[in-house]
Amino acid sequence: MSPLPLPTARTLPFTAPWLLAPMEGVTEPCFRDLVLTRNGPDALGGTFTEFVRVSSMPIPRAVVRRHLGPSSFPQPVGVQLMGNDLERLAQTARNAVAAGAVLVDLNFGCPAKGAIAGCAGSALLRDPAAVERVVRAVASAVDVPVTAKIRAGYDDASRVEELARAAELGGASMLTVHCRTRAEAYCPEVDWTRIARAASSVSIPVCGNGGIDTHADFERLRRETGARLAMVGRGALADPWIFSGRSVSRGEAARFLVEYAQLMKERHQWPGGGIAARLKQLLRYWTAGGLVENAEHRLEWLREKDGAHLLARLEELASQP
Ligand SMILES: Cc1cc2nc3c(=O)[nH]c(=O)nc-3n(C[C@H](O)[C@H](O)[C@H](O)COP(=O)(O)O)c2cc1C
Image 1 (cartoon, rainbow, N blue to C red):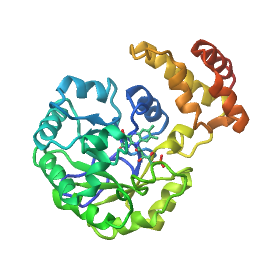
Image 2: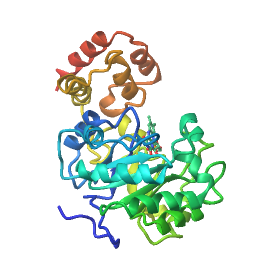
Image 3: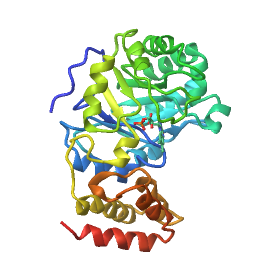
């Protein structure tokens, strides 16, 4: 499958315009690989690592390698970096490329207190010139495409055009706009006109993000905003088949979760506190295959404290067609 014909100096390696969002604590290699095995390169165009925080020193190549994981797929995995120190970010980006990264993404959206206190993530949205500096430092350090992911603003969305232009001026090959501001966190409402405003103020491809719940939303977002690509976060935790739009049986849905646990064990990634928290992180959103029937049933899954018991219940469902 040839890369998307996008008019950028560094061709984006995505195989389709629908992308899986970076999600800390979720999109580690086991989860990503399972989503990639279930959505071919025509349906899912690329994925990202969880953010890799660059603070007191550059992140070594071996650590980035672990974030990339052991498998390879036709779709690229972008390594997402978050930080504000230009030289350490640049060196980490070089290390990422040496580790095999074909794309580096920069995080300007994390709303966590730690990121804000360290003036990284969404803290940088208060200063478009800083966004431009960070993008330029990384884009000049590596030959692979460097992309930026912003929220629509810090307290409000009044400067979204300015932020988009800052990323473009810095040399970003693509800009992802999560349409919520930092202040809006993960509120249920979304305003896609902010994505449209960003898309019409730059000539680099814009990827719209925020509030995609169904397969049909991908195309709707592109149509309504002029964004060339669309990215889904929690919608893919609800339904990992959202990219292909295939509806799955209860057994198939349960097999995803069972395989997830198996893969974590095989790869020695079994969480210290047990598997329950990781499975419940998905079950909190899960809709695929009618595995979670209604709000009451969801609470019942989420109340399960014993990982072995939770897994046994899923295994029983997984044995069904
Ligand atoms: C659990 C979780 C972890 C996240 N971690 C990251 C991250 O590491 N990097 C990032 O840029 N965004 C992160 N995000 C934001 C998502 O990438 C995405 O922008 C956001 O969820 C909005 O998309 P959605 O409405 O489709 O979920 C995270 C979101 C969630 C729910």
